[in-house]
Length: 139
Image (cartoon, rainbow, N blue to C red; front, side, top):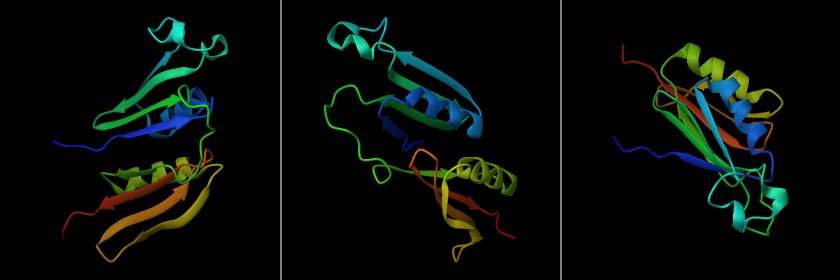
């Protein structure tokens, strides 16, 4: 099955953000730092504890991320990525939505939409945009 997986880039707070997402979504989090990697020799010494690559997996969910190691430019946070999370139950969408919204901003509360799904949008406390959707079973 073909999937689109999001890859997020952070300005030095990747570890904190990915731990937050793990609290919200569950699963297994793997964090690989620059230290001990093949990139260590080519990176600044102050970057050794930054995240070179992170993966959060929970069933079919895969979220990848890293700190901004390659660019001298600061990131534009907030409109760089929108993550679409397709949920499998009312309970799941409500749980994920409320956890991701903590400290963030709800842009569109969860509501039944014209296509029959429960849908909502928010920005989390890291400025990342999320769309959550639950396609209810046909009755």
